[in-house]
Image: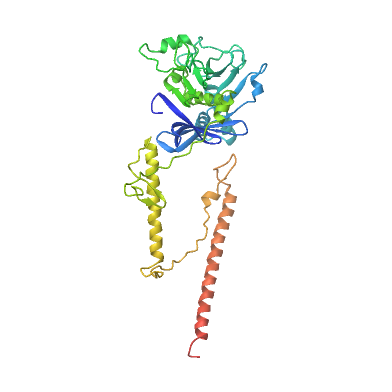
Length: 420
């Protein structure tokens, strides 16, 4: 998202894939569900639509764990990017100090544990209050941990940890005279009224009609009536100053959407999105205004809902023109003006290439804990001797074949000469 507050539209692109973004073809977040009870969440680079980064893999706990006397854990959220950054930094530090592989692995393990202590969070079901709670270690971290943040009164995992409330509600979405049930809305709110009152600006005007507390707007929400996810990144970062706090809150919303008995059937009943094929408007003379290329047509006068759809159509038309051009060229090469095969095509000589062996590649460990390290000198010497020997054998065989071919041609000329 280019701003600190934005809305993402949800779509179902396949049986187990859900996207959230400006368009289904250009998603910002992508959710994929598995039969194993796991969720995979990836994020697309806003300026590089083809670059997708997996950010989270969430294992959903069995539903029985939410019932007392269990701890109510729904899932454990640990951003993958935080773990990767910790591993990369510890690896660079170990290489700088030339540590042994065992010490390097121990340093990586310690770095991941520290990252988990700072960035990992728990999504819990509070049976007594009938709500979900997200405990993130960054809540109230800066300038210091506030004692006014709400804490769960029932869950031992969340003892003395500030939490965010995640509720699934449909109150206030319909007119009081309406008898139809409203689709639910998942709301993420900060129950700390004192911090909210201090941090909120008096000039801010509340624009949302979603049911929220009396003190503040929701940090994030997912409306199943419009299938729109609203994210207030500025508020999330104010409450939980962390590089991965926004991803963690979004992951919690998606986990609730899949795990909750109210929202799960709605997710399963969403219609599949299919990309629309742009069509050229009809001409008064019949047919299409734009010329057909390879069975498909494109016109620049078609109105597109988004810039992305227009770019997709232009790319498709460009590709079809290139295919049509190549097909025309191939047909021209195969036949002449009189319909006969052209003799201008010359036979291309094929060169047999012998695979080369790179000692730098085979002279290092390819896998395992010692990956990238050089092999012992004896092993490298044996490999070098084998490679040189192989090259000599190939050269010798090539020489023998050339000599045999030369003798064969010479003998044939002598036997077929008219001077016999």
